[in-house]
Length: 395
Image 1: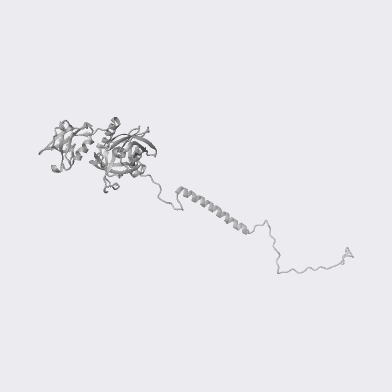
Image 2: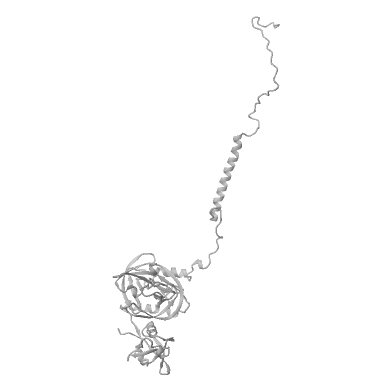
């Protein structure tokens, strides 16, 4: 009111400020530039990013270890790879190497007949398609056949010729550039030599079984009722051979064919299906090869003879259990030329003991015509030796 410059018409009032409230604190004001505590969102973001990075790194490392170690489920299975043993390397002289070498030359033979289809095995012996098989595989057929090769392909074939008494037949495949087998020497075999039998037993093509030579010059007399009687000095083996192996090759440890699988022994009764019991027999390849060459060259095979007839069943026992008695001798035959006479008892042929008439017949047919064999015989109470030059049958 004492202010001289005051407007005398302005109202006058006295404002007395209230005393400050000591119990209430002023609201704090934060400086945005000043350092402070992190917010909740920041606190959650940091571990989340860390977890994602750790998971990615762990997954990448796990995948890398799994790929390198080949492990599944985090567990390493098996030992560390080592150098393969010698047998697993399939060297040419191993059984697997021999099978790989021979299989491309082995075929399945199918021959149509009035009774159905006869099936057996065979093997290629010339690049232009000649195949060796058994006579009993193609006998009764129409003369036409087909073969199935190792790769599954097929080709027609015709029968070139057959020799029922030796159980060898030759067919010709309508294909060239084939891979023939390698021949071995069946006369050089020894008991215990390892062998493989290859063929199509029970229609199971490309089957390989292993065994050993169980015996040599095992004389066999075989044949179907009403058919020809077959004689041969066989190679006996314990390799698993069944129906369908007939005509297939028996090979040695070098992959060379040393026999033609032909027949088996069985314990089954008449009319039942026979199976392998470890007694199989093969025609020696030296004999089969000679017969094959005759068939290809002339259409028929020569039969080797000694020029004598042997006694009937039991001839061996009539002479004390050893030897085969000659019932008759052809006047101009090989036996007569060597001085043998009817009634003489053949004890050994080329050192091989004779006990049954089939022994002499089968062993003589093993040799080629013109071969010279030693004969030990008994005449009366004396033993003598002579050499016989075998000949081919006139028929």
